[in-house]
Image (cartoon, rainbow, N blue to C red; front, side):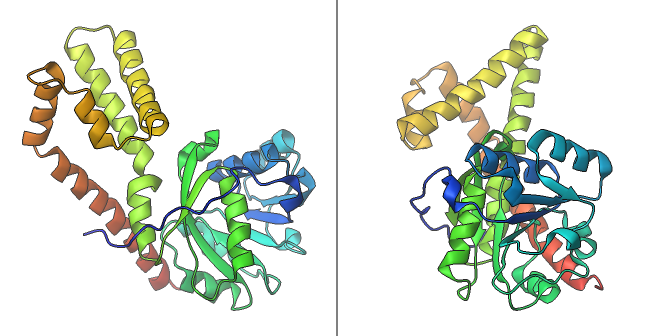
Length: 292
């Protein structure tokens, strides 16, 4: 089973005020880093406070042109004075990206590298840094993300707040009580957007099979997802209650839900999330077992 307990999200300002800006270095300039950078800039952080180490020439040039941030092929030339180091590379790229880095004491290291545990980060960057692991998700591209965060007990409150300021620029945040719970966060929200995209695909295909034009089926499926999400968010009602409210006895919705339930929909979803959590855990194991 997926283990770990989510704590109640902290009460936070959704977007950090400009005075909270601090020199921040992103190691990796991919989609998630770009989303976080865009959020920080929208929140009023000066571009001069943001640096990005990205080996890909085209991506590096695009970040500089679009956001006006400082860029370089490698992190070593940008590290001096950085108060926050955001590790935004895939686990397979992490060792090369961090090779030779010597972060200042008290630097807050915020890692969004899936599966890579704090012990591995500490082995690469040393004991003088403060560590926070995070799992954001792709709606961060639109400022609508959710990030689960974890920090060991030795991480000071100031470092936790720095991590929150950076991650909250891309959406909401919540903390988990133990590091293993990040595997569950990855399964639920990190990978979660893809589940809903898949459902929209299936609904569209089913609509076409029922005789709808492809464009009509796509519009109906997509807008239904958007509207349902708005209802969950804006009403504040539990999804179970919303489901009950739209399910008339002996109606069409009840017929569809009965079929989903009888076909084991809940069990299929639970098994899928378990597979995602298992894979997140395996990524950490693989990283630790790979020679440095």
